[in-house]
Figure 1: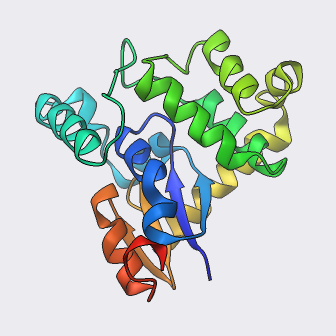
Figure 2: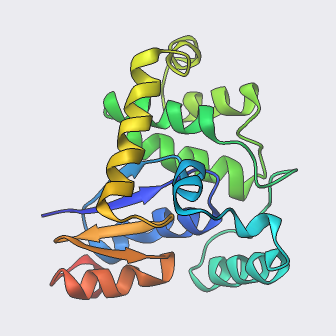
Figure 3: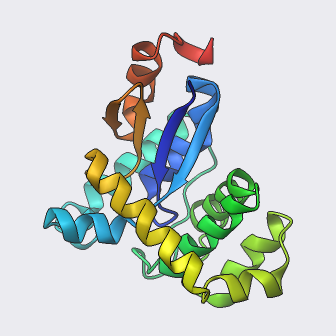
Length: 194
């Protein structure tokens, strides 16, 4: 059974996890959720607006370098509103382009420093994932897409997801990009998805 990785395009730790999840876990199903709604449900918010911001920024940058990823470029005003980006991610997933969209979105946000709350930046991600810009723009306003994101987020909350990235393997949750190796061992995959 493939692992499921819950993510939000505004989460730098999700960026780290999605960038290397298949190398560590083998096949992975990426599940877009709205982390802001999870935070509201749990009663807390992003560390990006706390006194711990600088230490987390440094840790994300350290991990990216350790994982061999490009230097992190932070979007202006981060943390940014990812509601439309996550609606588009749900839409892309329904079309079978979810992984391409997630990788393109994270590259735009944390490798090029694009603010995905800006329409043009978000439509450029759709382009990079091979999706039609006009269809993508319509999708974020579609009631069925709004509902699909809400339902996916509610299912994640009901499953016990506390934040992102969280990996689900055989009914067990692993919270954090630094837990991918533990998830791989738990799932009997060993390291490197073998």
